[in-house]
Image (cartoon, rainbow, N blue to C red):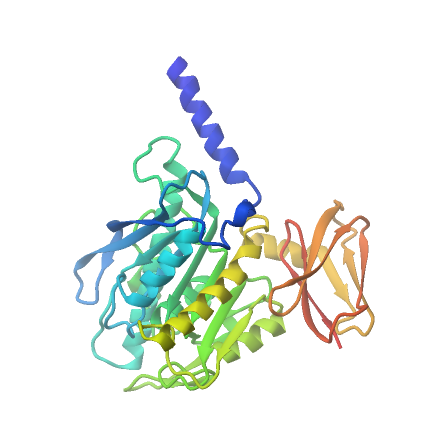
Length: 412
């Protein structure tokens, strides 16, 4: 009986820790390199799936953890390497550098391998390869959620992940995967050239199917999407960094790959415009006159680009850790039904009203600018909230009530 109570206590503690609404960012965590050393665990199998030749392929990743850290629930960053879906691996220099730097801040980070290669070499099959990569990234997310859920029962492979704070990112092809993981989330959006049923559906067959593959945000480094309209109001935020002279992945809109049918894709500049239009937070850093993945390498120039990349992504992520848990599709629909903002655009003041059909509950509110920076904090006490412009510049802002998805407002 004593052992039963101990087990129940462990399960309750794990559930309570997972239910916490925010990550503790005090003491410089997730902003300063407070850990001198990082422990890397290599070649962890996170799933398996069918490769392009029809064989079963084991999927592996490396985990980076701050050495000596004792925090029980930590945010996770999952990175995927580049290589055009034909080359590269989880030990590529740029992703290992990002994993190490962020682990020193207190994050748990992971660099994943995923299924590569495709034949024949044309734009249809590279789309399929890209989607296989998305399925593998989703399998990695589910793997870590499974580990978080079972950590109270067994200490084996306990990475101490908070399952509500999982972010995905990547470089080049890896950024394509990360963006699609978050925004290519409906079967109706998948291009007709991809036989979704043959590939195992949106989630794939990589393992741990009962766990969610939802993410809290995306790190897009020199990536693109097949359709900007996949980004919709209420979606999770993303950060983008891209060179204006990128000859591989277009900074704006363009075509990639050889063969037929031609494939048009939309780079970070177009995605930024789309995100602003639908009210999705998306700070965007332009590498002026830079080419493809300028942050990759060990030259002085590449290291300087990596320093900028690291700082900009760090500053995007840290405020998100102080927000409440993962925004789900149901929560987005509920927000749109509950809240109304008018007029849009507004000259001097915006009225945010709560639906008369729903019970009102007071809550704190943040106002963010287009770069994702908090410009005001206040408390919503009555069903109607007035947001005066005062000294705010013209532009798009996000009103973020605690526990609800952000609402877009515009001052002209």
